[in-house]
Length: 271
Ligand SMILES: [Mn+2]
Image (cartoon, rainbow, N blue to C red; front, side, top):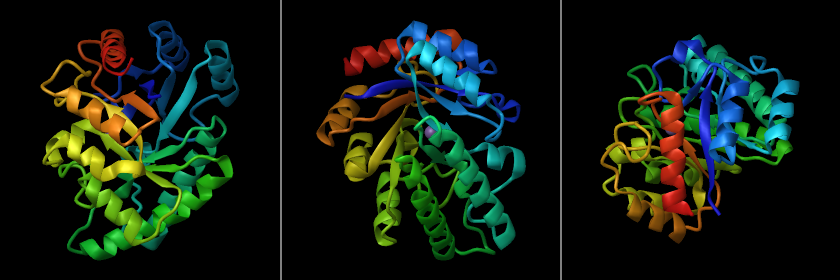
C-alpha cells in the first residue's frame, strides 16, 4: 500500500521553496494528523535543529511516522556538495549527510540526497563527477544500513543538476557502480520536465524507486497543474510501489489549503 506524507520545512533560507508546511514542527505534525496523513517528511537546517525528544513525543502522540529527512540544507546553508572539486569540502558534505542519516535513523526515516549531489563543471568532467557521486552514495548507503533504512537518491531536473535527470540515469548510476542500499526518488515535478513519458520513467526506475514526491507539473499541490495522474497511478501499481507519496509542493495558496488539497487528491487516486 502507498502511504501519504507531507513536507515540513524548518529552513529559513529555503523560504519560497516547495515545502507545504513551515516553521512550527508541532503544529505541522498535528495538522498532518488532523488531515489524515500517514507521515511527515522533515526539511531541517541540520541534525540538531529538531528537539528529538519532542519530535518522538509528537510522533507517538499522533501515531504518524517520519517518512524521510532532507539534506538540502547542507547546500542551501553551507554550499556543501558531494561532488565538490575540493576533497575537504566533499568530506564535509559526507559528514553532514551522515549526521542527517543519524538524525533520521532515530525515527527509522531515510535521508534524501537531492541538491547535495552538485553538478559537473569544466573543472570536474561529467564522468569524474558521476564517479565521485557514486562513491559518496555507496559510502552513505552502507552507513544507512545500521538503521535498517536505505539512502534515497533523487534525480533532479536540468536546472538543478546536470548529473542525473531521469529515472533511467539514476538506475544507470546505481547499477553501473553496483551501489547497494540506495533507492531512487521519483519526483513528479522533475519527471514532468525530463521524462519522455512520466509513466514510462516510473517503469524505468522500477524496483529501484523507493520514494515519490507527489506534486503537480507546476510544483503546486497535486490537482493544481496539468499532470495526468491516472497513468502515473497505473505505473506505480505495475512496479508494485509500496512506499510514500510525499507532498513536496509550494504552500499554494497557503500551507493548510495545500496540505488539504494534496491529501484529497491522494485519497482519490490511491484509496
Ligand atoms: Mn523532490
